[in-house]
Structure formats: structure tokens, C-alpha cells
Length: 276
Image (cartoon, rainbow, N blue to C red):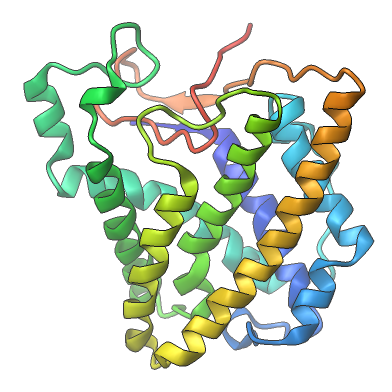
């Protein structure tokens, strides 16, 4: 089993950014008002957008989100930022566990497939349907985890969708430079987000959230991320016009002793390149 540790840092920073949108609403993640119009205004604030652009540009242009300038959450955002960060990270981990639960790895082994990133692997034989199923099951597992811990909330419910909306921006950023930053074994991020969005609407009942309210919350998330994407892509297009060339993506892995891990790595940001 392995995890690209850049994913953990990405989720941590993204959690802080999303929490900033609701920082003046509450100091408790479980009580956040995700329908507040103030959140949209906060997301459009120039200083906030500068942090957003910094994070996505670091990943797309510099090859690692670790290159982004660090920032400290405001006192009112710290608690919700922590919850968002944990829930965002839980989803890609749960996605991998879902592959195990659904028997995808056994089937791949029977087909004689190799793991992602190894020469000879044929993405065409790795069905997109498996990834969609793992996303939906991963979202279920993520919410079950936080329900078991007694901290389930609208934050944990929507985090899988938020994660994939962020991956959409990474994907679009790579397109600016005609570079593929999304794994060949995974469907386009917008398709994945649409599947998880539909399942999220069904999960809302477990938290007593009406479908109408949850739809409004998801629409607001769409508005926030549309702003994020428009601003980020505009910046990256300016970089391209100036002749900026993206670096190969740095890969930081923490894994087992085998060179061929038994679980396909979750690489939402693309086929990674390891540099010495």
C-alpha cells in the first residue's frame, strides 16, 4: 500500500482554504453554515484567491504542492480547517479501501495487470466503472468513519465532492500546458464529481439534511470552485504566455517494501515522475 504524501499536504491546504470561506460563521466545524452568502464573498476576496492560485500553481508549475507559500489559519477557522483537512484526506484513502472491498484488485490480478506507473500497464484494461464505484463507496466509507467517531457533519458529508472539484482544477491546469496531470486509469474529474454529487444527495438523509438544502449547499460549492478555477486558469495562462514551463512532478511516497504495491496508487494529480 502506498500514498503520495503530496496528497496529504494538498488536502491540508485545501481544508484551510475552504474553512476560510466560513471563518466568520462559526468556530466549530459541526455548526458551519454552508449556505451563507458571506462564504461566496470570502472566496472571491483577492487575498484569499491569491492563496488558492498559489496552491494550484505550485502543483501544476513547480511540480509539488510543497512549493506553495505556507499560511496560518485565522483563529476562528482553525477547528473547521482541521475537520475539513481530515475529511478531504479520508476520501482518497477510502477510495483505495473501496477497491479492496469491491474486489477490483483480485480481478486485475487475474487479468495480469501491473500497477500504475510500471511499464507495460494498460489503462484501457482498467475500467472506469471500477473508479466510479470506488468513488461512491469511498464517499460512503468516509461518512461512516466520521459517524463512527461522532463528528459527522455537513463538512464531512461534502468533503468527497469538494476533493474532486479541486482535482478538476488540477486537471484544467494541466490542460493549459497540454500536460496530463491526471492518471490514465481514472476518469475525468468532472465525471467523477458528478457521480459523487448524486450519491451525496442520498447520504444527506443520514444527517437529517433535506435534499433541497443539500442541493443548495452543493450549488454554493460549485460557485466557490468556479471562482477558484477561473482565477487559477487565468494565472496559469499568463504564466504560459510568459514562457513558463512546468517542472516534472515531484513524487514523495511512503510505502511498503515491495516495488510493486498491491493497491493501485491514488494519483488524482497524474502519472507521477520521480526525480532524484
